[in-house]
Amino acid sequence: MAEPPVLWQDLRRHTMARVALGRAGNGVPTAAHLAFQAAHAAARDAVHAPLDVQALQDELAAAGFDSRTVHSAATDRRTYLLRPDLGRKLATGQAAILAPIPGCLAFVICDGLSAIAVQRHAASLLAHIRPLLAGWEIAPVVVATQGRVALGDEVGTAVQAKAVAVLIGERPGLSAADSLGVYLTWEPRPGRTDAERNCISNVRPEGLPPAAAAAKLAWLIGQMRILGMTGIGLKDEQGVALLR
Image (cartoon, rainbow, N blue to C red; front, side, top):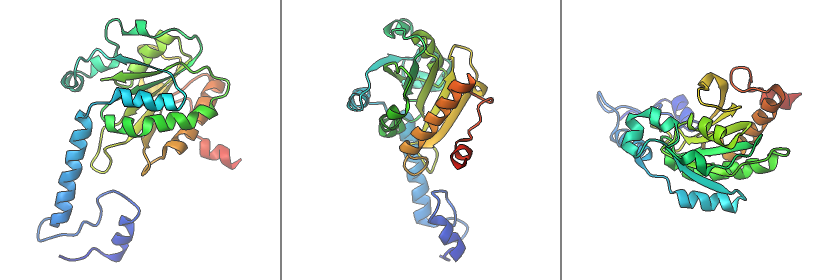
């Protein structure tokens, strides 16, 4: 088996992407093939793994957050995967669990397509952002099972939040099965579109570490409050602001 060129070997030290795999005849080397299969299995496991809600709530409590649990209208994992629409709304009666706190900032944690990502990174991100939110009343964190991003709009409406940030497990790829996403929405209500949200993606130690993600989210929240909007009208200029 021929070794990849030196420049490709250098690149491999800086990325988890599948580059410079080498070749064995008309195929890839056995080690690369086995690594691909293992990554594919990890991605499938991440999609189907259940969220340990109690363990997450314990972590949130240790970080100083009260929490509530709800579930979407998707009754099980299979329904969640086949009916995305049901993951976007609360099951009947769930909104009554959430007490209104007019004008608050709400955090919703959804298992999404990778409960593993939520289990590993959600509580850490919230622990880092808590000291950065002076001036906000924070609602109890809502932990939602079988949830999608738009579920945050229903939760935000129920608690009368001024804004909602949804932390959700992203669709796993073949180089990352534990990537967490964050979606920020000003004045959440059913019918909001993705164009009205800001997204922070790839939150994990090998991507955007939770502490850095918390700093970026806090910056976006501050600008959101000034502009009175999220989405295409709120540009991520955090780096530019730091240079001024």
